Image 1 (cartoon, rainbow, N blue to C red):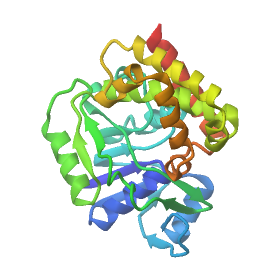
Image 2: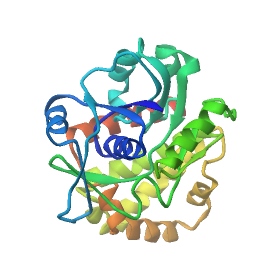
Image 3: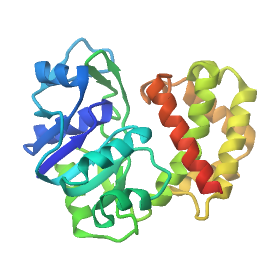
Length: 288
């Protein structure tokens, strides 16, 4: 499969390296210093704190051109508009693997509704300079599959083909017929979580403030209550039914865990703040 991966951060780098290792014709889009580093060293990967760095010679480009079997977009929410402008004339189905609570309509309006697929990368990691550090237990969702689906929930040959391609590359993927609801459920949970973490100054600091965690849980419940459909996955319904005290204890434990550190929650960068503001705006629009 000929694949263009748009976004050279943690998830884009991991995805492009896995597909390249599996023999696919992959190109990775990058800009500025990241582009220069990838041209010098390729994608550099390391497990957590390991001193061993593996280099994968993924071809890198500054601008997409021509056509592809698949364009995988892994950027922050506030960067999507720029990506849409750059791929309008580039042929290929487009799989948006990112935080997105606005539905498929604005994506399809920009590039054609027939091209749009929705998904979410459920792995985690951090950037250590030019090296992507990831948790071996969760890289590219060994534990939690990458959900991929059509905006309208249909089961189509192209979704099946992408899922098979990802699986042969060692990426645990599955078809999700309720992808739009999945993304909105995730935003209902993730936006209050990230807002609380950034306000506190980190996941560990937030874990030490039970009152702040309790307030965060209440906002999550309010968000889920405004959704027109049940939460997806259904396990998120527990946020509305479990006792508040139990949820607070569970989330405090999560915030202290290595998983929270490798999920990107601890990174309060300008880009992370801009993404959070865009996601919060999308959530407010959904509530209205």
